[in-house]
Every structure is written in C-alpha cells, then in structure tokens.
Amino acid sequence: MGVAMKRTMAMLLSILLQSYGSILADKSTDMLSLQDFSKAITHDPNGTLNSWNSSTDHCLWEGIICSHRHLGRVVALNLTAQGVAGNISPSLGNLTFLKTVDLSANSFSGQLPSLNRLHKLQSLVLSENMLDGIIPNSLTNCSNFRFLRLSRNNLTGTIPLSLSNITQLTTISLSYNKLTGVIPYELGNLPNISVLFLGGNMLSGEIPPSLFNMSYLEMLGLEINMLGRTLPPNMGDAVPNLWSLTFAKNMLEGRIPASLGNASRLEIIDFGYNKFSGQVPSTFDKLSELQRLSLHDNDLSGTIEWIWKLPKLKVIDMENNKFSGSIP
Image (cartoon, rainbow, N blue to C red; front, top):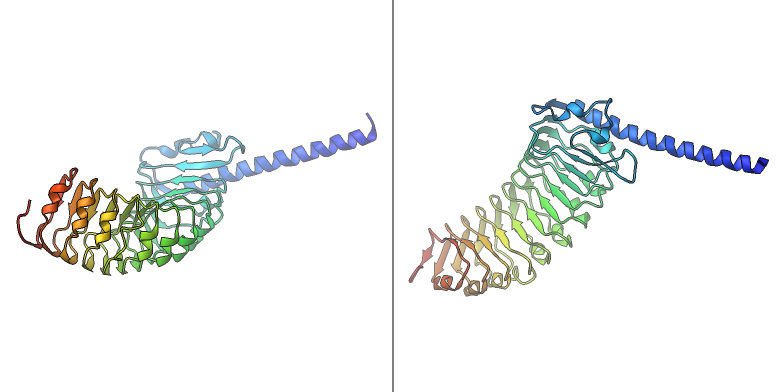
C-alpha cells in the first residue's frame, strides 16, 4: 500500500472517529439533560421516571422518543397526566432536537425556563399545571412553532407581542390564566392560526378587528375577560372557516354585527352576559349550521321568530333581554 493511500485512509479514519465521537457526545448531552430534568421532579406517584437511569439507553425511557436519523437525539418528551410535580428544569432547553413537549395535566410549578435554543420545537403543551410568571419572549426563537398550549396555569403579565413573529403558529391557547393588558393587534397578522383561546383571563380593551382577517380561524374563545367597546361591523366577512365564537362574560356593547350571518360555518355563538343592545340581526337566519346560540343577559330587543329557520339549532338561551312578540 502506497504512502499516499495510507495517509488517505488515516485521514478518513480520523474523520470517522471525530464524527462518532461527536455523536456520542451529543447522545450523552441529551441523556445528562434528561437526568437534570428528572432531578427537578419532586413527586412521581406513578413511578414514571423509574426507568430513567443510566443502566438503560435513554431512548428507552418512558415518555422519550428519539430520532431515527440522529443517533440518541431526543425529539419528543411526553409525560402527560402522570401526576408528577416539581419545576421544569432549564436543562430542557439543551435538548436541541426536540420537536414535541407535552407535560400537560400534571403539577409542575415555577416559571417557564428559556427555550430559545429549541429551534426545531413544533409543539409545546404545558396546560393544566401550576406554572406562574410571565410567558418568555424567548419562545420566538422557536421559528417552527405550530402549537402553543399553556392554558389553565397561573401565568401573569401580558400576551407577548413577539408571538406575532412566529408565523407557523396554528394554535394558541393561553386561556384560564391571570394574563392582563390588551390583545395585541399584531396577532391578527398570523397567517395560519386556526385556534385562538384567550378566555378566562383579565384582558381589557377592545377585540382587535385584525383577528377577523384570519381566514383559517376556526375557533375564537375570549370569554370571561374585561373586553369592552363594540364589535367590528365586518367581523363575519373574512372568516369562512369559523365555527365557534365565545365572547361570554365581558363588557361588549353596541349592536351585534349583521355580517356574522356571512360566517356560514358557525355552529356555536355565545355572547351571554354582555351589554349588547338593539335587535339580533335577521341575517342569523342564514346560519344553517348553528347548533348553539346563547345571547342571554344582554339588552337585546325586537323579535326572534327567525330562529325557526335554523334547522340544526339544539341549544338556545335568550333569557334576560327585552324581546317582544312571539318567542319560540
């Protein structure tokens, strides 16, 4: 074998060893990060983390899924409804191949750690825990984000304006926290949003008209806040996929826009406990998919015989208004 050939083979062997060493280092990093994550768990009633020990490949640990292409790299962490308690360790942010995190329906507390290194993250589900503090701006570094579910925690502060920069988002659920301030107008610029749940907070100001320009929007929940003023007159003109609209228990006033009759896929309208006045638009008789209509406890008047024209209507609550004439 010639000298040149020996040098070439030595160089290739060196590259292979370096590459293998890098893979082992990355694999070890993910395992160590998971072990650090487990150290922050203070209660594990189901023994979910019993398998999380160094004698077993971490890709076989309960709740862990690793990549098939990248040896040992963790792509999913799912511990939903395991009854675990503790803090979410900042080491979670070291699992740079993560695409999915679901820690919902547990008893995690403390603040959300920085996840700004998780550029591959697509889904973060932390709902039904006891997390507090603010929603960190570092989430905007997760440019592949599609699903953000943080509902039913104790989060405070305002809705980060920076969320409007994550253009891949399809679902934002921040409902039933302690968020204050206004709904950022810029959220309406997100082109792919289908679900926006912000109910059960202490949000104030108006409902931004921009929200009704989101053509993929299917569900909009803003109930139980302190939102006021009037609704945009054209709110029903550009939401062809909208089927659920819940604004109950706010301080909305003025007339219900007739354009809502153009949102032909609407199945649920809940505007109860507001300050709406005037007549219910007769254009509602075009809502052939409507199944639930709740307009109770407002200041509405006029007649509502058109209700008979809605073939799928199953639930109707119109109490405590000023309707006249024959009420079905």
